[in-house]
Image (tube, rainbow, N blue to C red; front, side):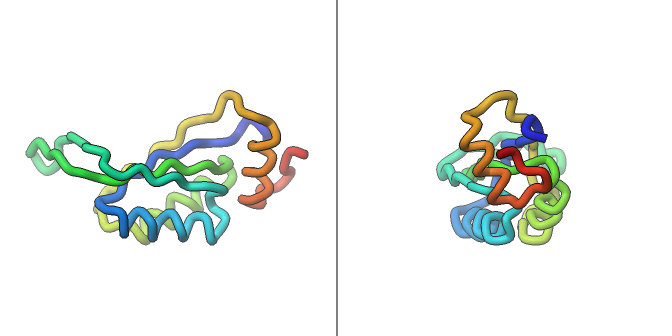
Length: 112
């Protein structure tokens, strides 16, 4: 299980929305930590048009066992019809940090 840690990238339209999502994820122990990076410029196609928006990027640290619940929580709070939720595997990391992440998100069989 120790190799199943994830970093998630989630964008939000503004600081207020990003903080609401981040706070809920950490309070509910769906993520051990969420970093908010303001001032991200996103370019994408939506509804047939090229869009360019300023957004906040959330970087979430969690465990794969919490992914489904985390996705549901984000979808319930997020103002976008299709929020960006991208999970990237952690291939290496400081073991004591990963142990802490596992303990915080209360994953079963946490590494010790």
